[in-house]
Amino acid sequence: MNRLKPYHIRQLIFEGEEVSLDFKKTITSCSKIAKTMVAFANNKGGRLLVGVSDNGDIKGVRSEDEEKYMLTKAAHFYCRPALEPYFEEVYIEDKIVLVAEIKESDTKPHYALGEDNKWWVYIRVKDKSLLASKIVVDVLKASSREDGVLIEYSGKEKALLEYLESNERITASEYSKMLNLSRRRTRRILVNLVLSGIIRVHTTEKEEFYTAS
Image 1 (tube, rainbow, N blue to C red):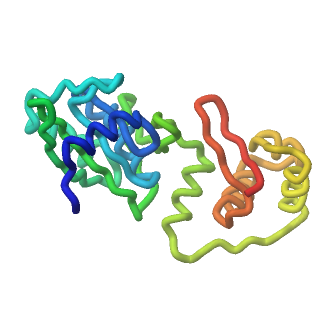
Image 2: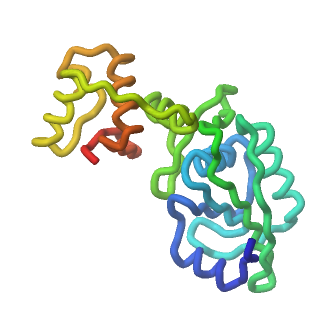
């Protein structure tokens, strides 16, 4: 693996926080950082730059060993299945930036232990780690299996695709009401269509909706 150089860190900071990059001035809570770690693992992976404030100022870490301890504790005990971060220390402006890389997982979904002592699935949306819906959790579970998806086109699937031909988007509740479907049936249909690549799921901070692929 190619080692990061100071100019790499400056370039990452210049590009700003995004779907695979997060800045942390310091690690203060295992449960909070676990959210970001599982969100990276459930997506395409990502990097944490520790010792960098939200606005991109390089503060450096006081003790890289202490930060590594907190991150490793979060990865091992606050993430399920456990994660294994890859660490790298980069000296820049006489300070140390600790880089913790989380690889994309092949055993999705990963859960983070919340402050309520419950396990929750998080996904990465732009520069935020958001709670995953039950439908997204089912998609993550099924995407880790190798048995594929068998799509059976009934009138219910056809009605959804016809609706999306003339409308940009639809929510799960709108689809459920449109065909008078149970939540479970709605979820199963949407999960299968997402996995087959026929529709796409879009998660935002305010809502979740579906569009034709």
